[in-house]
Length: 200
Image (cartoon, rainbow, N blue to C red; front, side, top):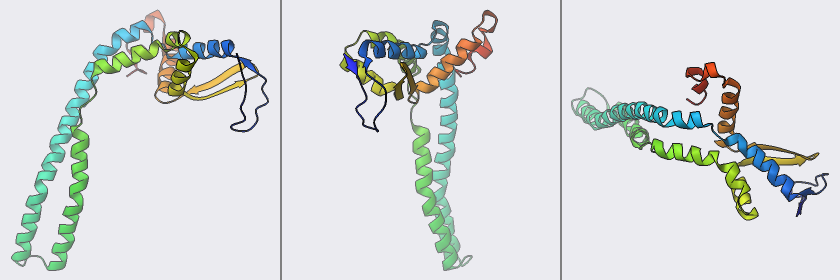
């Protein structure tokens, strides 16, 4: 089978390209998403530690926002008492009460945001391991399944002068960059801290 430009974004001067050649090129580029076994082995413990730190920070933020939300009705009560006792006039009371009422939805949103559970670290590791197999899975699939996978991960792809130029969508592009950085740093003496910094 041959592929050619459909003119969807303007006529492209390239001639036909064989499907097998395109498939091989896409498969090679998908290999840039393969995460090395040493990283996949390191990730579960690192993600768990990161999750614990992140959850502790979320819990602290949730307590702070909830305490602030709980204070607002008391502030309104105090403000009302000040109005009744003549310590503030009606205009000042209306202004301050409006400010407190405007604060409530903002703080409720912060409480809601802080209270969300983090996705399990195991699910993230499994997703990264599956992404690492994207190239092998791609090569073994039907053309229809290959197109589905490419729609998921590709940002843009151009076939020009017999060469495939492409970019990945987020977060796959970040994964490709981390892999690229790891490949540059991967020497026997660097398999410690700095090797994993870009993954953190």
